[in-house]
Every structure is written in C-alpha cells, then in structure tokens.
Amino acid sequence: MSKTIPEEEKTVRCIVCPTGCEIHVKNVKGELIIDGHTCNRGEEYAKDEFIAPKRILTSTMRVNNGLLPLIPVRTNQPVLKEQLNNILKEIAKKIVNAPIKMGDVLIENVLDLGVNIIASRDLIRV
Amino acid sequence: MKEYKTDVAIIGGGSAGLAAAIIIKKSGLDALILERDRELGGITLQCIHNGFGIHEFKEELTGPEFVQRFINEVKHLEIPYKLDTMVIKIEKNKTIYAVNNKEGLIKVIPKAIILAMGCRERTRGNINMPGFRPAGIYTAGQAQRFVNVEGYLPGNTYVILGSGDIGMIMARRLIWEGCKVKAVVEIQPTVSGLLRNEVQCLEDYDIPLITSYTVTKIHGRHRVKGVTISKVDRQFDRIIGTDRFIECDTLLLSVGLIPENELSHNAGAELSSNGGPIIDNNLETEIEGMFACGNVLQVHDLVDLVVAEAKRAGINAIEYIKNRYGKNLKKKDKIKCLTGENVNYIKPDLINKSDISKEIIFSFRVQRPERRILIQFKDENNNIVFKRKKRYVIPSEMIELNINLGESGASDETKTIKVEVIPQPEVLIDNND
Image 1 (cartoon, each protein chain N blue to C red):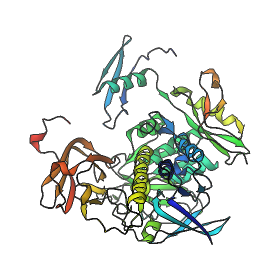
Image 2: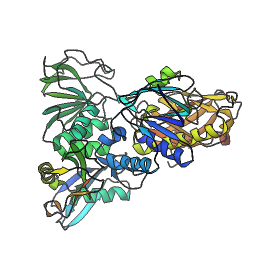
Image 3: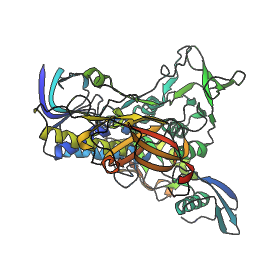
Image 4: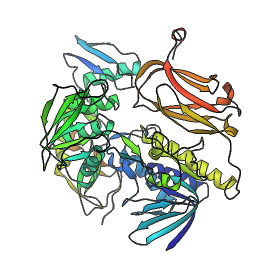
C-alpha cells in the first residue's frame, strides 16, 4: 500500500517496550528526521506511526442460531487507522449463521482493502 | 450422590486449567476439569482484543483464538470436563463436592487437585464508594462480558474509574460500539495499565486520562446521571475545592483484581497478603497434593504467563502422584520468603530446603515505580544471596526471576529469604543493566 509521507512533524510515544520513549519525527523535504528513540525498534515504530499508523481491528458480529448472540472477529492483518471506522460499519451490517469455526472468513476483502474479517473462535449451533 | 474418581481434579476450565489438564493427560494420567460456566475458556474468551500468545505461540492472537487452541487440544485428547458445574467445597482430604443441574450434588475423589479458579474484580464495595445504588454502575470486566459475549450495551455515555488495562481496553471497545467515553479517571499520579493501551486505546480516540483524581460522588437515584470527581493528595485524600461534575449514564470500575480463593481457604489452605494461597516452590499449597496456578495464585499481566505457570503446576502434580501420593512422607523443611522494601508480595512463599540448589522461579510486584533499582535477596543474617540491577520497576509489571540460590550462598541452614527493591548504590551505576 503506497502512501505519501505526511508533510508535518509529530511526537510519537513508543510502545515497543515499557520505557515509553517520546520520539520526535519530522519530515524535512521527504526525508524523515527521527530523534528521541533509544533503540532501533523504536525508530522503526516511530517511522511506521508517522507514515501510516496501522492497527489490528477486533470487534464482534451478530450471529443467527449460535450458542451466543455474537462471534468475536478480527481483521486478518493490520489496517490503516483511518479505515477502522468504515470497517466497523461493515461488520455491524452483517449477520452470520452458526456453526462457525475459528479462522472462517466472514467478510472477504472488506471495502476492497485486501483484508478479510475472520472469526476468532468456534461457535456451535443450538 | 454420584461419585467420580480421577488422578487430578482441575477446578476451573480457563486458560490455566486447560493448560494444566493437557500436560497431565499427555503424561498418561487422568484429569477431570470442573467448570462453572456454560463453556470452557474462562475470561480469556471475553478478551476479544489482540496481544495474546506472543510468548506461548510466537504470534499475536486475540483472547478467543488463544484459548480456542487449548480447548481444541482438550477435546482432541478427550479429557473429560463438566460444564455448568460449581464446586462448593473441597475437604482437607481433597474430596470435592460440586453441583450441576443434570446430576445434582456430585463427589469427586482425586489423588491431586489443581486450583485454577482465576480472579475476580474489585467492586464499588472494595473501594468504599458510598451513596445511592442507581443502575449504571458496573465493573469493567462485567461490561466487557455484556458487550463482547452477551450482546448488550450497558449504557451510552461513560466515565471509567481506574486506568488498568481492562478499563482502557473497554474505553476503546465502547467507542467502537458507538458510545461516548467522557474520561478515564485514575487516583494514582500515573496510568496503571500498559503504555501500549494508553496510546492505542485512549490517545488514539482523544479520551482524556485524568490522573490524581477519583470519583467522590455518584449522582442519580434510579439511573446514574453523572459523577463528581475530585483531585486527591498523596495520601489519596480528597482536596476540597477541586470537585468537577461529569455527566454520564454509566460508571465503569477498573480498580483491580483479587484471586478468588474461598474454596482454597475453606479447604484449609492459608492465604498470603496478595490473596493467593501460600505455596512452596512446586506451587503446592499447604495441603499436600493441592497445587495452585494462574490468577488464583497471583494476578498475572499476560495469559501467556498464566499458561506457563499452569504447565509447571501440572508437572508438579504428576510428580506428586508418581513419587509421593499415599506414602505419608514427612513434611519437608522449608525456608520462608519474606517481603522487604518496596515489595508487595513474593511467590513462592516457601522454599523446600531440599530444592535450594535447583533453579526456582520467583515472582513479585513492587509497591511503587522506581528507576535504577537493585533487587536483593538476603538471608536472616543479612547475607546477600542474590542481587540484580534493573533500569526501572512499576507495580503493573510482575517481575519474574529464575534463580539458583544454592549457587550464591544459601544452604539448607538458611531460615528466611527476604526480598527487597532498593535504589542502586552509587558505585554500581556505571555498570550496564
């Protein structure tokens, strides 16, 4: 997924380890100036958070005839933070039928993002 | 009354109980899991967020995915389990009484017991929050179960008291379900959960974290209408004139967890200061052949660590049945572990003198955060038998150390081991961590 580097500066609080370094990232004519980190992993994290922060999305989807009324679901890979809300709306629209197996694809290629919504557990039919 | 005989009875079918059952069954012994809920899996099932399994499976999973792997293995190994079955009593001779709606009262006679009942949340009563009792006050884990498993939203506009991990994760979860979260209020001067949760759950959604404040009044007679929060001083006493009103219809409490040990205590196992049973370095309680693991013993930061501890309990229960069961052996001499400066609790509470030259896993938490510290183990004559430097310690991170005390001067003459966390003396600072 290509994305242009944002023309700004940002302070990122590093979550790689509990030290919690405050890392400053600045875009100077397309080149990233990163400082405040104390390890390489922190530098990588700050870079990713600056260019395109991504998250795994976890939520629940409604179920027909299941032991439970909901099935926990997740995206099968991290998605851009700005897409989270749109994906949540897609998940909210959908109702699936039990039985379900962990890993079953419940929404394929959601919003054409190349990401699937998969089941996080088994759910039997009752 | 129906009677069951088994090698190991496991009380609790959550991550700890399942992991222990698997290791026991694989050794050729029988196990029987007693679970009070309608399905196996325990609390991990309602933790639908990711971040589990990095130690155990070397990949990042959600809670349900993590525990499903254990459930699948229990089923594959055909380990028997009873659902909707509530253990009501364990006798000193380890006979277990339980009830369920199919068989009524049942009796289980095991050779060994593994306690894996987990923990429960501290409630409004535990933190002495007075006032009326309107609808709309829940613990964070209770709300988590409503939202993630049962399919109910407990309210629309929330204030969350306590910045523990469950509280922060619920804040994000509720936003994702279309609710409003006005604030997370924390009585301590700093956030009490993991930084990653503060960043990904609060900062990502601009939820204010208000530290050194607590809820001093709940408004509303039938339904929560709002809360008054007030700033507190270092003794956590309310500072007059700092009251702020926040309108909300629901208050969530994320104010700590307590190991759930009524059964263990009534069986005759003594509890230590953290609420878990007193155990030796084999995770054995003071009742021979009764072991404890997971959050019933001590509240862990990660389910991965719960599982690791449960496997150890399983291995020790197997050893007990093979070498000690029914032999009426003399009780072993033990060394007592004591808590010193800035140590909240220490596990194990006791060390078998015969094990002093083996590697022993110690775990503990500090009472307050501190940087550049020295962890010291001292015997009763103040001889240092172990020391290690650490860059920082915080109460929300359990410290685990694997130590052979025999190598550094402890012997079977040693009577007590005191653990303390002190600032590093100046001369040590130039060394690396």
